[in-house]
Image (cartoon, rainbow, N blue to C red; front, side):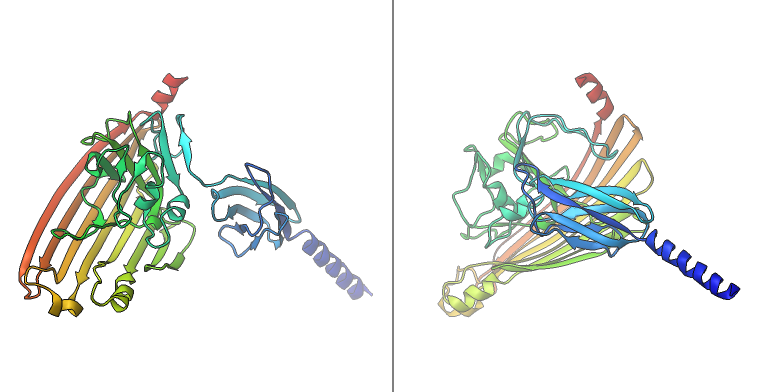
Length: 408
């Protein structure tokens, strides 16, 4: 009798424990502009296997979630990423109403303050055109996935060559426009051929690594020195500190892969991307006597590490190669014709971000860039060659809190 009572009590306790154990996470996802429900939005509890997608009515639910601390991550193409940390108690049901903001071209005319101690507010121009997130990919064109071709779609920007990533700004030549990558002015960061009549170029840095691009059309900050027509400020993104991620992509002209992940216990991150074009092989077989398309390949990476709460270091590296091989047309080429040519661009940018106090941010960059090119005729005799190398260093100090106090 006692044994039956004991077993019955144990079963009741187990049932009660189970009923109070797992919880439920549910909610809805809508568009910030029109309030429409968003379907097929990715919903994930970061650091776990709990995930789902929203239905046609924008609703989602994740059942049988163990108690604990989570971050609700909501992501979909064309919208800003949302993260909502929360604690789930035993048997609790958490409700979320998520409003997603479209990740599109926006024009800023205000000072934006951020809580990140390593990121300062910028007041470079009273009117700055910003391309952020997926806009760089969506506007980069189908044939050439190129971030600078996305810039060519902005107001005041034009290009008279569909095969050239360079552009003019309000009638000013590209030589008068400064291209800054992570606060360093670049010289010729392109896939291209030098010393020939071939006109065309592609951007050397990968659009998958771009966090945002800001086009300053006028009245920009003095930190954009040595250019008179405008400045394009490109910032690369950090890799994921949450877990390992890998992505493979392909287009009509190239294929690529990207991998990212954390360093240590979320003290830093790494991000590596590779690309290679195959359009030149397709055109060579389609038009064997007229192919004049150069090939390209590049590898680049960004590494970030927090030394402590006040010091962070970053390293960006890029190796890109462009080449052309017209060996199939050797018999039809003249002695001064181009048979083979190559262009090699290298970049390394080391950054140090230091916050001695909560009112001051000091950013230092030391960069090295190099360009090499050579062209040869059908007799393998050099037609021309060139080399360019440069060291760049700069330091910027920003009193974030002091500026905000003055604005108040």
